[in-house]
Length: 349
Image 1 (cartoon, helix red, strand yellow):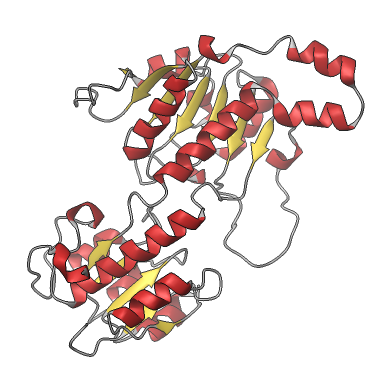
Image 2 (image 1 turned 180 degrees about the vertical axis):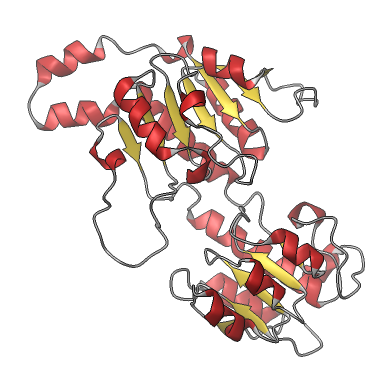
């Protein structure tokens, strides 16, 4: 049980309400959350004043909000990416930022492979031709498809999900290329992946999957120049962050080549974190060579349970005066404003 009284605010209570498991874990450890739903930074400053910890799913926590957290010990991201959180400001203020880095690795892998297979077999196009009775056209177009085992997948960014995707892709007979900041870092012995430069990967890959975090270095990394370096007839898959890609440039390259198509689950132009029902308006929506899903690649019953457990474990650790599990700490160089003891797995027993 958490011994001392702490004020904990759990944001996104309406868009992403705490499920039964998350609520039961709070009760198990004697934590009484304050639930809130707010996006406006000025309103957030008022809501979070005096809190000891805050958990967030999708709300942005810019520098002004983080700087106002005069007592806060922990910002807990109930998810993986932290590009909406002013992590540098948190570090300056001695606030630990923690996340759930592996909660959806399997789901992301499944989604990437589902998109790759759909593109390879042109399933959306084949279904459209089927529904409109254009059987001869479907047969004619399908004769131009490539056998998957003759194709190459390029993975840009090679963390936990990248390794999972590589293993699944190899099972389908794909050659797998990958690139990352340190090309010389060792790979698991059982992983048949060729580490190459980004330029080589783009020139040789039939499918390119983006699995990078979003930061100042990766924002619009895939601009028009880079997109036009991709292999003619290749496909781009982005389940990471929409702003990795210059979407206006992507539209042009999808219309003019060399890209044959794209599969997207994340977007810079579209806020999918809303309850408003609307038909999105964007040139990407007008292209029939784009497969689109609404940022759902991380979701499953199991990933929801994993993120709840990890988020509560991070919270319990810090409120009990300990570091979270090392792999869950985003700003590992932070000097906490309240001293923390080493991580202790027994805290969650």
